[in-house]
Image 1 (cartoon, helix red, strand yellow):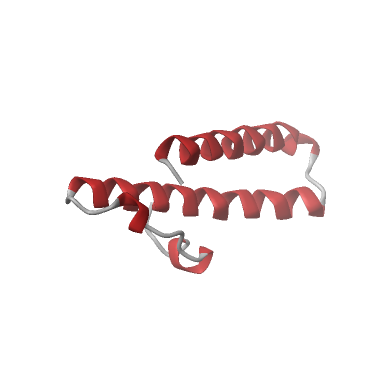
Image 2 (cartoon, rainbow, N blue to C red):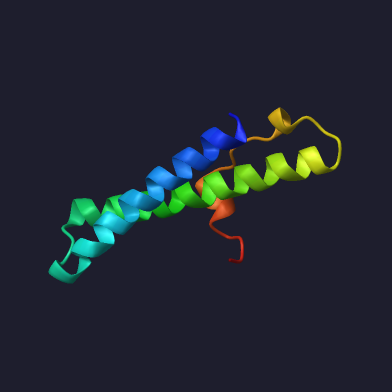
Length: 79
């Protein structure tokens, strides 16, 4: 996936997350809370993937060699 497409996915996820956060004052139902968790994991994966692609490019490697890591892996990274 090209960087622009990854950034588009990130923007969509952030927009969805912000929309859910605006409802948080009213309280999210269990499905919405679950979706917030999923969005967080997907964002972590997207940012990690984008960083891998940029690092590969910086060091003369093929950015397409980057891969999406499992949520359990990227969840342990320090923010």
